[in-house]
Length: 372
Image 1 (cartoon, rainbow, N blue to C red):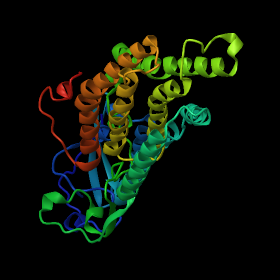
Image 2 (cartoon, rainbow, N blue to C red):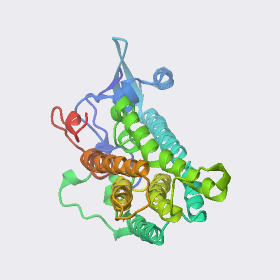
Image 3 (cartoon, one colour):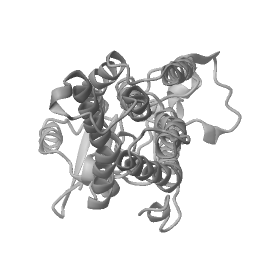
């Protein structure tokens, strides 16, 4: 642990306010500052420790503009006199280390979010090509896509341009707050551009790595994607190759295909929109809105599949599959997306992007949403 403390010396710079481009705020603290608090896990890199030790051995004790630094390594305390030049060198080095860590975190987040799976797009194109999608579903997808494009444009548009009006001193959190800047309507990352873990994974690591969550996703993939795609494949192949007898159990195949194809088509476009929103780094409230909207819209087509009109030719086995899908997506919307997903995404956006400092009550992190 390294503790830095000023003793019996007040520099003239302590009486001057920081100007544009300053990186430390406030300029001076009366209380001791732990250098280890600036590094992940409170562990100071060995390179920084070596640099401080090498600098302390080359400092002249006759320089009047000096500051005494009390450094503690493994319980052994020693006092070192540093010059203003050395202090600036230390500050510059630490600033470089912290900025490099922030850039690396942002780069890792961008690398992991730019990869978009093309499988949903290929499947959606196949559904359109085989005439398994109704005109109503195509119109709905076009309207939803236009809506989200408009929201994304609004989020990225400049909110205002001008000088910040500071009413209270407590509103100033950095020197850059005193200068002109442009703000977007809804930022997706903090001003520092550092990507906190809560923004990268708003649902939380404990939930996304749990067996129950993984089982729930796999069940949704089987019910909503694999089984309907298999039934459509059998219908299409059976209609094109009658001797195989695969489509013999389905009458009026076109109606059945659209009943199964519409929910599957909407699910594919949901996956496409979610991938694009992650790659474009849209704000978290916009990203959680994608599955909520598509899940809600898909319930209508699932109702038509599970409870068709009288005289429908949909086989009983496919109706049972439709009812199962309807129950699953109702549960997904009202038991997971709204009470858990929406709450955690909005909390992550407020905590990590909008707010400067947040104090959570005791046990507050464990009671967000229905799941721990």
